[in-house]
Length: 176
Length: 356
Image 1 (spheres, chains in turn orange, purple):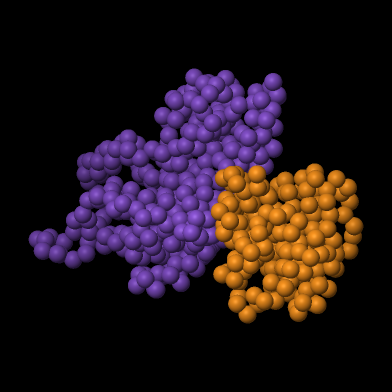
Image 2 (cartoon, rainbow over the protein chains, first blue to last red):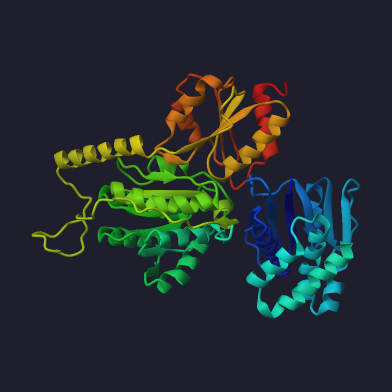
């Protein structure tokens, strides 16, 4: 049974909401039930930002994820806030270039990715989110990489497609 | 699933209205429903229809009054404090017996309150809001797809009864994205709008749209006519879902909107512990689905629990529907706090006495 309840969290402007969206589009591509729910406080660029994404064989219940099978964090406050939300045996993906502490949990799987560095190698720090998303898809197999690329092609900006694709692949490679 | 698209609830509202033939949209921005107006501002001109950002909520609802009086399909949308501002206009529209669709994407109150999801406008929507003996038909969708379907139905129901219809969702439903499909809908047989103030059209006299009746006899007769209409709506338009209600139950949850989905998660958690809980999900908040309670009342051991994102507003309707036949419990959060499935499950365990 496919069921992933994911929290993406970081600063506004890091592409937190869009990585969630692309994953939701990919899920839709594979006929899964999906939902995407953003935090919508008075949050602007530089403030905190997060979204809940669910991909499942079954109809989606609560769109707000509390017990996450996977959490992706792109800053320290997000790790502080959401580390405890990962279910036992779940997955925590950390942008280790931006998070300056070690996670405390020992009952979950943790992947630390120098996403900023990898993204810079690929071409731009702005696509660090895609490096992390690539790792998530590789590790959870919740959707096929082809579906994610299709979602990116249809719903992303065309001029960034190749760059995004490379970033996804580097992230997947790291997690392999 | 080729026909499905991923859409934000607020945007889906706009597209659904366009599909339903909405000719005019008048609105004013307020979180968490601003995307409805933003979407309409882009789309309406493209399909040759009217979008107008009014100078205030009061202006917007009075523009709705005018357009509805002229016989065109019209919608406005707002969130809680904005709906309070519209309340006077809504009463006028109900009094003048005009069809229109009003969206409320509810945020926490009272006052300016907050901007996070809530259900605390239940009283306002179902028991009045504005002055006078009037009723709104109130739809409460639980998913973006249901939102799309009910917005379209809302236009039909409004036209059928010449009555405003409100579609009420919480902030979550407006902000979340889910797959939606715009299904081909059979055209409804609806009465011609011979009452519309749209020129003489060969008639001898102008049609007049009005909610003023200075003679008490006339106003009472008008009220009696409205009441007759409301009884007719109560007979025909009740909608609800029963979930997991086939067997004997330890308790029945009553919950609507997005929160009902969280309750379904709680029901699944409880099932694993041997506790069987059903759910009544009102889809129309008015008319209230009293008959749903009659269907399950003999099958619930510990009665009912109203689960709300408000402080016991729907609880009163649950008590009326149960009418003392079984115990009625309550669990609510407010102010924009969204209950978790575990929280609801714990409350229920407290009532039914833990795992068996």
